[in-house]
Amino acid sequence: MRDLDELIDVDDPAWPELREILAAATEPPAVLPGDDTEARRCLLQMQVTARSTLGGLTLNTGGLILDGGWLRVFGGGTGPAGDGLPSIGQVNGFPAAFDPAWHPAAGLVVGHDVLGGVFALNGHDPAGHGRPGAPGQMSYFAPDTLEWEAMDIGHSGWISWMLSGGLHPFYEQLRWPGWRDEAAGLSYAQGISVYPFLWSKEARADLAATSRRPVPMRQVLGVAADFARQMGPADPGFLGTV
Image (cartoon, rainbow, N blue to C red; front, side, top):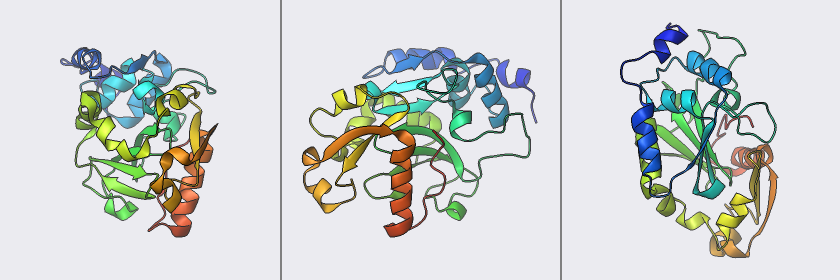
C-alpha cells in the first residue's frame, strides 16, 4: 500500500493536461471547487495516483457538471453533505478511516445522470457481479432498460469521450424538448422522476408527453433498482449512495 505522499507527488500529474482538455471541450463542463481533506481521503482509499485521470479529478476538483447539470462526475466533493456534490468516496461508501482491506467489489460508481443512469468503473470480476465488460472498463446502468451496458473504454477514455461530444448521441432517445432547463433547475441532490416510467411503452413512444418532476436523487435510483429486481433481467447491485 502506498502512502498519500507517494500518490500525490508524481513526476507527471494528469491535472495540467486534463485542465486544458476540459477548457477545450466541445461544451466545457463546470469544474467544481473541491474539499482538499476529503479529496485526499478518497485518493488514499482508492490507491490511485495523481498521474491518473481518476486521481487528477479527485485531487483537483469537487467534480464535473456536464450538459448544464444533466450529468455529474464525482471527484473530491464540494464540502459538507447537503445540496453540494458528494465525493466519489461518499457515493461509494468508503470507510471513514483508510482500510487497506476494503475495496468496491462490484466497481466504482463515478457518475450519475439526472434520470438515474449510473456510470461505473468495473472491478476485478465484473461478470461475477452481473456487470458486462472487462475489468477496469466502464459500464452504464441504463434507466430505460434497467440493464448494465458495456462501454468498452476505460475511465480516461470515458472522460475524453464525454468532452468531445459523445453525450449528445448517447442520450438522443432520453431527452425531450426543454430537458436542459429542467436539468439546470435541479440541486445536486435531485434527479428527475419520469412517469410513465422510462422503460414503459408509453415513454418510449412519446417521451415529451411524460410527466416529470424533481425528486431526491436517491429516490430516482431506488425506483430504478426496485423495478430492475422485480421485472428486469437481474438485480443491478450497488448504484451509489446520494
